[in-house]
Image 1 (cartoon, rainbow, N blue to C red):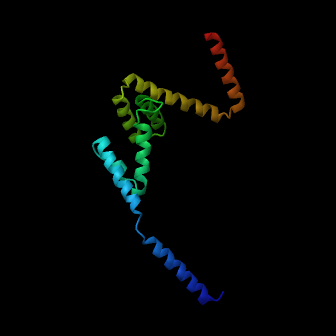
Image 2: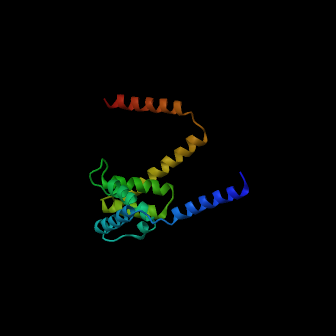
Image 3: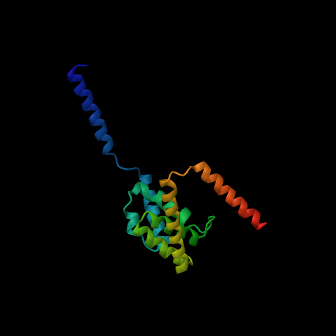
Length: 159
């Protein structure tokens, strides 16, 4: 292809890309972000800055996830259990923001200081044994068989 045709083709492609990048975001995204912010305000009494760190296209989905699972009282797990699980994971990440929120939310949902301590201890135990089993490359099939045998023996004793 002659250099002038190639240059013209590249210019047309660049102009097309440039034109696409100037298009404004869809109004549906703006509307869903506005609706999400209104619902956050109504639900929480304010819109914490953590939500404002997200782009408008992401806020509705992020809020739906939090409201649909974490804040939803009609799920299989109660609020205290969900927040204690969040604390266990946050302790392992570690994330000081993610430790503070579920700790306070667990307390709000009735968790005692002892339950919070036990949650963190369980997280530490799981991390400890994960390190040992993975580090020593324990055979997974053997581990599963031995675990099943242990549970079968415990079940047999309880009957």
